[in-house]
Image (cartoon, rainbow, N blue to C red; front, side, top):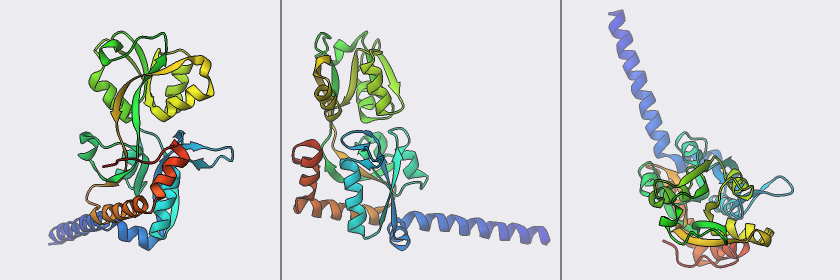
Length: 262
């Protein structure tokens, strides 16, 4: 009888814990509002979307967007620095409630997280010195190229690069750019904004655009099943688009309005 009673109690406890977990997952928006805090994963190695300023505080388009979301929700915004590789795991394990970190939408990602409407433009391509011929994917054969592991440019490069392409993957954007600038690779796969910053900082490098990998707008990432939270964020994005706030952020950091977004 004692053993049977223990099994029943154990089963009831397990069921309660399981139900509690489901409830927490389903009530993310309620939890954020109750805690009066939203934890948002942001980049700190990808200017102008997210980087560390001279005051050592994060700044950039994604940081401004995160603060806008927190303000519209009426809660405290806690910024959680992430890399391209760990931003989705942070969301899945509850270390962050949202991801606002140059997150492009791909079928692979859509299988494990959900996305809001897009909030900013983002283009990724291949860049390199003028003397390096690379006008199309086939030209990458035998070429060395730097890319950030897990980023959308890594995914797109992998799709089109010939088998003989010497792809060097790095854990964050700073390491990727440093490898290219130090001559470890002939080419780099990165965003147009990052490449433009390199060209502007040192024109003598002769870096130029080679070809487009993908037009990949940025979306806010939320955990699977967070429909109420996603709907609330979509409403915030729609309102910010209508009143010009998204255009203002894009002009501030990218030098142009957001344009057409999905």
